[in-house]
Image (tube, rainbow, N blue to C red; front, side):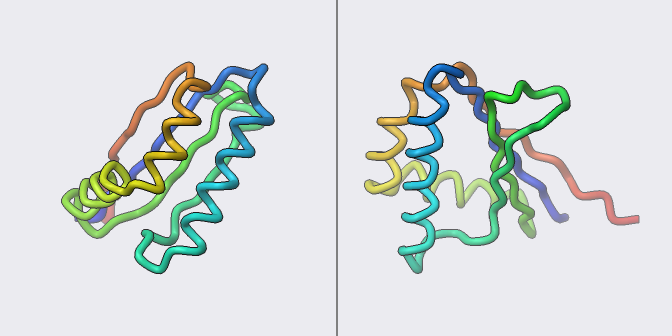
Length: 104
């Protein structure tokens, strides 16, 4: 069963420039490291249920286990954690959502 995972962050609007600066560093890290998972998309809402001071990272996986493994990879990676420690104080809210992909 294919799984779609979404990570959603709402950040302090007064810290948008700093938040995005750190997010670019995550992109650089992902690009530079061959062992990093590829294929995720980052998006910022223009209109919708999420406020404009949020971003979404989304990716499709072949299984729920594969999605969990990526989350564990990020949690266990020192370079990722160093950047995350700088970014976490800017969060107002963070959550991870999992969806099964309907293939009729």
